[in-house]
Image (tube, helix red, strand yellow):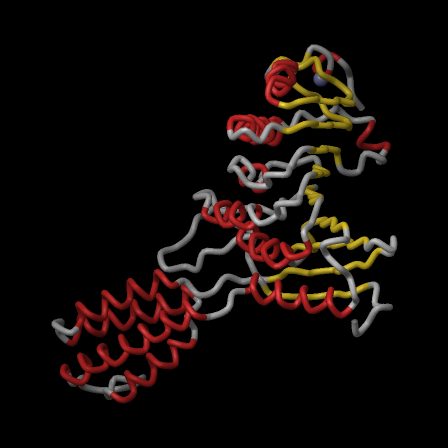
Length: 357
Ligand SMILES: [Zn+2]
């Protein structure tokens, strides 16, 4: 034990994905085909290759590209091109591309590095994670996602790790370009939860007020990676969601449709900023998309033999009575402390007839 009196540790880390390896496979094929091409086609190939390196995050290969083109007399401002030299350049570059692809396979991932760093920290502060209770809270902040980790030891003392994840982008609605590296909050959070899995967390709390810390691309790639990391959290029995006015992108709810978090028995849902009198005086929120995702998650888990024991929802919500009925059939106990349950799909027999402030 090196620092037993250390109670707060802050880690800032970049959880950006590794460069896109699929793009290198694509470039390899392109360069292989290029050795039979003419000078004009070869020039186009090198342009595409440059674009692929840039978009896929393989920035080091941009230097290799400049080097081989320079050696072939085809660098910036070059005059007439030597076809054989260009073909040789394509083959040399292909060698660099293959080596880079091999290196990507061997490179340690962000999650692995974080796992090692967090392991070293808890050893230094003298916490036995098998005896401690670990609770994680995730929330979006301006430039990434914050994870607050509370570790309560058997001595009753609580140590805090504050992790600030930067790097992965919030998914845009425009989709991804060919060769672009795939990355999202869901991917970054998957790497982060992998890194925190050694702490054996028992509870994960998610604050999703106007952005979802587990947001993913529409194709579900990030969610798959997230589910893989969640499968490692075999002691986690409680999920808490503090959702806001516009909560729509519940990446975590999609991920737990899979048979992961096998110890999960309790889900608690509250509404962010319930203590605001301004919000409390307004119309109770329906948040149909969010609650539909919750229903899909608990139903799927029930089908996997992982029925939730208890679901508690508290706050200024307007819930559909049919939804409540369906959910009661797949969850052991449903406890509701909400403003209204008189909704039938899109019509609420109370909220739609009361003049809310
Ligand atoms: Zn209502």
